[in-house]
Image 1 (cartoon, rainbow, N blue to C red):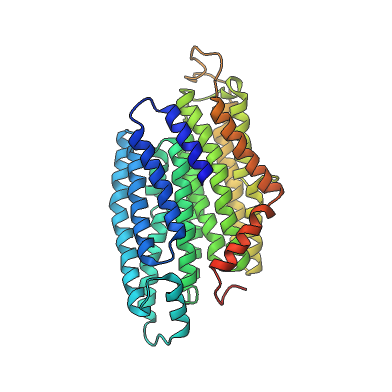
Image 2 (cartoon, rainbow, N blue to C red):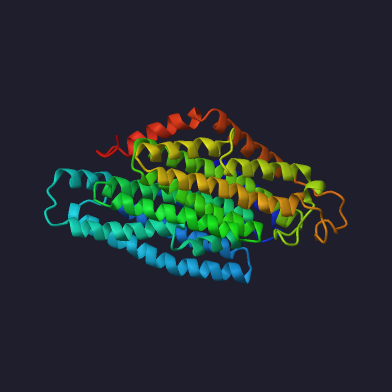
Length: 408
């Protein structure tokens, strides 16, 4: 996350002409909000961090200056009030039942005390906390709001937005599992929402005609993939979900950086209808976007393959082959959606492409962005070939954070 923050700040200062001081400040505050959500172990601080994070997302989106972005930011801010209220109600109910706002203390209270007839209250608290979980991750049915946010912001800002969303999604998922994992049907509800998000997100990505929209819906779909692993509730599923979150942030950052250069530095179009011939102008850019698409599609030896394989194995071990089939379908459909756009923008003959008709003979890639792309691509390869580098840390984290009876 810190490495991505460095990349985003450097690119923002390079691509924006003036008045970028407040914009950079919002970028740093967005990073802080994501870190605060991860470190919070009580519901009050979690609520504050989620609320501030939602407002900062709206500010980052509105900073792009377009009317569409400002509308998207306004809608996102309006619905964030609903999600924040849900989290506050859940906080109040849990405090009333357990007497604690600290997550660990509340869990211990639930496990050691006789709840009597308080199960109905716990289900209401679970419902409101699930509402905040759905909103923070852009899961179905609020996926149009999140996709508008990803589409409207500058591509470099979307790198940070999708990383923040994944971190919030993981943090709230772990709280839900730790707090309500023993309730009947709680994990089933989370798993159903996750699977529907995967399917709807990938279907929407397949019908888009703009590369930015395709990436926006793929981020939403892969958020569902992360929560599928976590919602399985098993040790292997949790590790797979955490690993998928890390991998998704890395390879989506590669694709978004390529989109940034295509849209701003290269003065090109991201529409698959009017673009073409970019590979001839910039072979390196074409190579990076193709390799990033391989990673996003779960093709070995890239990192996406390892995390998706763990999730598929976890689903099969739970006796859920249909979940494994959906994950595989999403992986194949991701490949189709990305390479349809890559062919039209990069590999297809130029025709009437505005980029190919420009005066420049070369599609110049800034050296700093080239270095950033090379570093991110190296990370995808290292984690793909040596996944244990990440799994050792994630395994320890999963054991420490999610130590509850239903974990095998």
